[in-house]
Length: 216
Image (cartoon, rainbow, N blue to C red; front, side, top):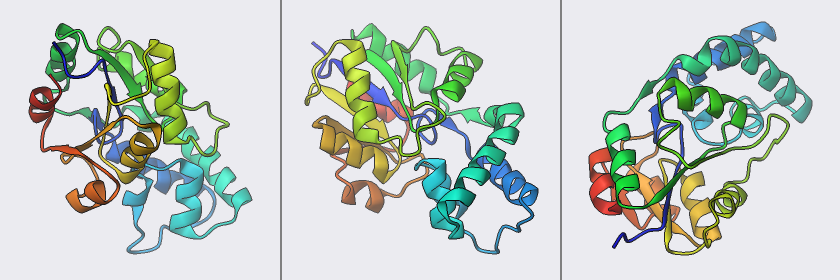
């Protein structure tokens, strides 16, 4: 009998390495707005939170400017950046093992659903996920707790310890803890062990193969 009814996976840094497309989109947005990316800017901060928050936090811009930069970011991302990424080794096998064990699966990401619905079929994963959950383009906050709850509601399953949320950043772990599901940290992504543990990770995996063992 499977330990979990459902496994929810973040996308960026958990299912795929999307850093190249994200960084290229940031640079495009800043240049298009007549700005330089400051030397030493922490672009890694963008790998997790919603874009509006990231532009404000990293570059110290006001809300109106953050919205403009987000719109410019999406010009490049929609045309090129979305596909400047690579699936992590072992992800299809992980998903197949989960489904073979009778576990429901879903993408739960702060990346807008528009882009998730481009990427999931791009990597031939559409038959491996029961749901794809993300915010719409106008959602500035993309609260991870709400996204976890929405995914389990969509799957028709309880929001409790019988579900696991897998992610590589503190936002994933904090959302899992607040939603009351099991928090599982993906060490192969963008966050550190310390970040994940501090945010409430109960289990850690260094590779998708380890996730398969932990979750099935």
